[in-house]
Image 1 (cartoon, rainbow, N blue to C red):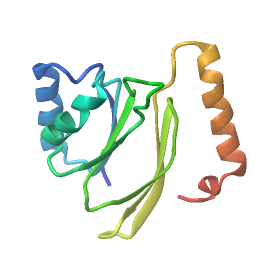
Image 2: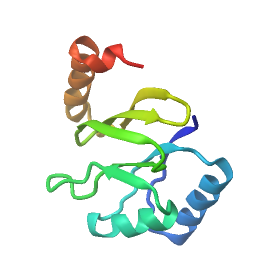
Image 3: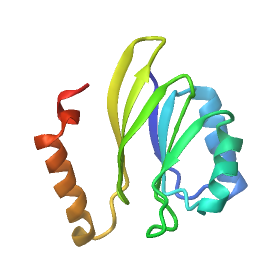
Length: 137
């Protein structure tokens, strides 16, 4: 199954949107993460629907993080469950009914300073040590 993660460094300009659209049409992934989109929450749905028509999406936008840094998009043929969402991580379970393939995937966009990243590293260590996610594909 084709997956992607792309630090697009902004999805507001027409040139960047055209690049993403062309890449998407050429590569035909089933799920992926767009990082550092700089999309405002009120513009996100229309932008994602224009780039990925008919696809579903999840983001880490929140009142605390006005510009979410991670947007995950997927083909609606997939079954996707969001396990965990923070300001630096989205963790999902993915099942492809047509192939029977299932896996866990994380999209990470870490903050800039070491101090801001410490909670992310602590969470990743906790997930690896105690979560059922660590025992699933």
